Image (tube, rainbow, N blue to C red; front, side):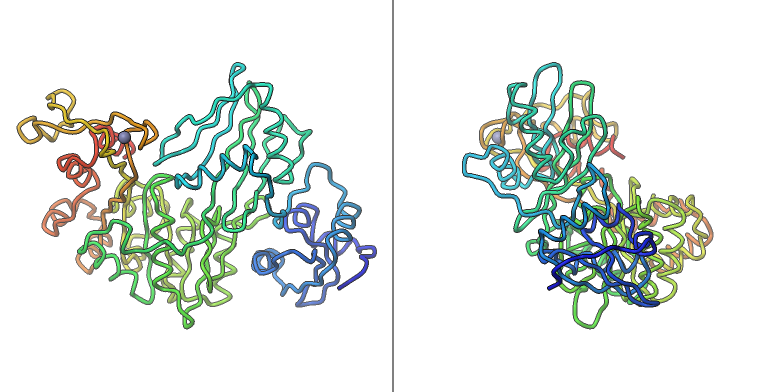
Length: 471
Ligand SMILES: [Zn+2]
């Protein structure tokens, strides 16, 4: 191990600027035409940052280890930058049994929650935990206790406690999961959102997700092709990433090179290369994809197709023999086709590359302990369903079992369109009205699926409307 870090030339400092140095916890040591050597602290897990840095710098990256103490000191002297002490290798969160913050975090995790909101408004402070996709108020706090809690989170996630006017982002690390911390100044004080990132994908299983038998067959038909594009659409929080990871698990074997670029990385999966998107330093979906292609992957997972540039590159990757998996914000599986055409993808290229288009949503399932049956009223039913068809339905009530939400768990529903020759031809010709074909193939829309769950007493009208209005 290196005992001290000397002066760093300006050339090296330009190569690794302060933001890179602080956010990755590295200091440049030396550089050659092909390789950049970096100092890092002895506790840094370099696997995670090696890929990112190689993409950003465009050279092979090697590491020299330094003790924590020397590293921190040198980083502070070389890159003097107050309030920027962010680090990817934040030390693991430790706290006593009576630690309220830890208690809240573990409670959220037990509830399978994706995020915790800590906020203050008009002298009142509260903590809400998202359960089955909806925020539930769990704790009220005295407003005097609020600043202490905020400071504690800032310290634990290496953020600047004196900064109260600008948004800040940090991270809390636990042994089996991570939390992304985002702080936003509001009118009444700082609001904190803790996003829980599951880390471990062990429990993720395609068979448990909610695909019906036919759908799964159609889906896998597209996935098992050596190249092409698989797209999953739906709003934020509809479980798209979980579906993609369940898919990658099937594809993950020694023979295949799998690369992902995501924001944030929600799961880890052994044997694949995962890169965290960082737009502030130029690591975008498009730039990562460009670099990936030089490393000849077999399978590429892009967190999201947001713009035309990424869409066109994804198509190009698929055309040149790669299997590309990604997500997109559209309302239906077929809606994805017109969205990509609107983004500038030529229909004939799309027709030749898209294997399968999937739409998905998570529907809340009524709590069996407290749901009650009620007579349907013509006025409250969706237009396409009459009282004769649905004389009664269940409504949510709320009890202790379901944290007074009326619901207990969620179920994924899918709409899967396998793009075969016939549909490919339609796309090529721009004939995008395919209702008849979908009907023939008995492909149900998400709305029809939700209605089915309403009829069987598994979900409520409220959930059906939530699905319809969210597209
Ligand atoms: Zn209940």
